[in-house]
Amino acid sequence: GEDVEQSLFLSVREGDSSVINCTYTDSSSTYLYWYKQEPGAGLQLLTYIFSNMDMKQDQRLTVLLNKKDKHLSLRIADTQTGDSAIYFCAEWLNQGGKLIFGQGTELSVKP
Amino acid sequence: KAGVTQTPRYLIKTRGQQVTLSCSPISGHRSVSWYQQTPGQGLQFLFEYFSETQRNKGNFPGRFSGRQFSNSRSEMNVSTLELGDSALYLCASSLQGALTGELFFGEGSRLTVL
Image (tube, rainbow over all chains, first blue to last red; front, side, top):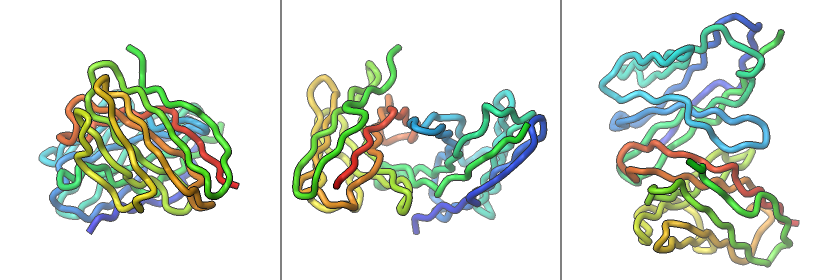
């Protein structure tokens, strides 16, 4: 089936690490993505991971993939107030040529 | 390099009317996808065009249609508008199309149906 689940809210203090979790159902997904949406804006591609990788690091962002459990996480190190946004996890379905998005996790960073 | 441009950014229509939204992809990108974002349903795939052909389609009624021009610009049309069509419509372009899912989104067109 096509389903991506995320928790809806996360609140952290500035300077702490944030971890946003996601589970997906389609084991044939080849690419998994993290997008960021700020209020009133479109989606900004943050990072992605190919399904044969376990981890990918990109500056403050670390993506972990547990393919067996179909679990994806995004860690943001040294979280800043500017990181406050909604973060969407998405799996790419080759069949259908589309992204399946989670509901989005609203990250609130308190000073 | 200019990003994905969507027009109009905001519009208000009444039930029964139709609407056309426009999307100009990043230069060189030949694939254009459309997504609908609502608070209740989240982000849902509408359709994808590549080289003027619809390659993939989501589960939306026939009132939702689209097309792509030879310069890769795309339009989507919604006819006989319903209140539930109120949403943010996002266009995304891609260099490789339906291969990797690396999509670059525009700011969206926010449609309100009264």
